[in-house]
Image 1 (spheres, rainbow, N blue to C red):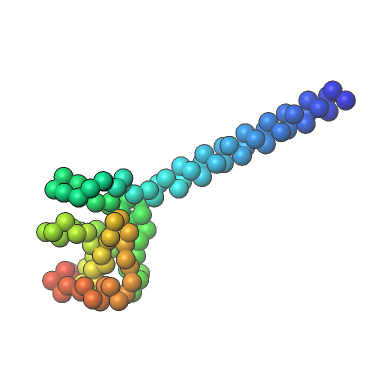
Image 2: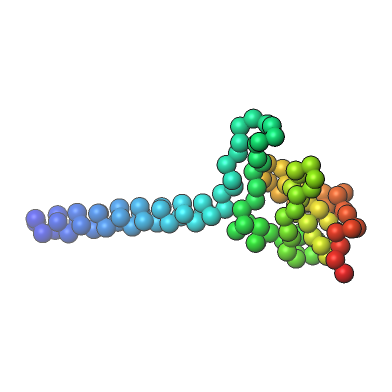
Length: 114
């Protein structure tokens, strides 16, 4: 009887260890796409949230499914740019607004690379 209780106790500890290990691994995977910390207040020294490089590497233009690049204009506003068609998608507080309507609305012919 004592042996059975010990085996069940070890199995329970092993199960708890596996659950903790998986939770930590999932947390680390989810953290790869975290955004930069938001700054409090607005001013010349404050920074906006930006898209993480990991997220940027998997984002694609919704129209042609090609890669996009992150650019900032002279006013500090960030854009995801598709240089194949000139579409620009705004990034607001680190969140890309990747709708075809937004890209068409902010299209810039000068960005197209030939």
